[in-house]
Length: 74
Image 1 (cartoon, rainbow, N blue to C red):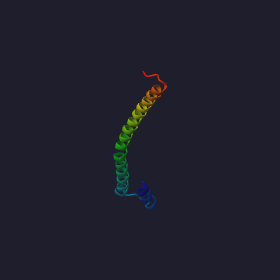
Image 2 (image 1 turned 180 degrees about the vertical axis):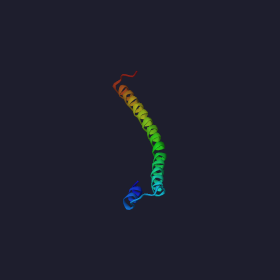
Image 3 (image 1 turned 135 degrees about the horizontal axis):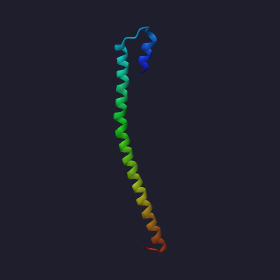
Image 4 (image 1 turned 90 degrees about the vertical axis):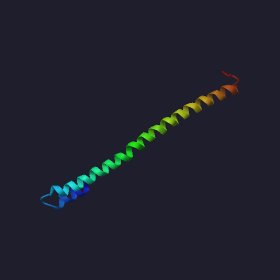
């Protein structure tokens, strides 16, 4: 997009072919960004869910240990 505005500011009459190159560049960077962002987000959600389940399991186990130490086995 920066290159498109650079062309527009330098030329009185803008050639559509020149603008198409800048638009293509902007669309390519957007597509590559999405290719990186989508799998990364899915992986993050997976790890966050796994960490949450581990936290719950640790809380349950620590509660059980405290009950044992108190003499209140269940």
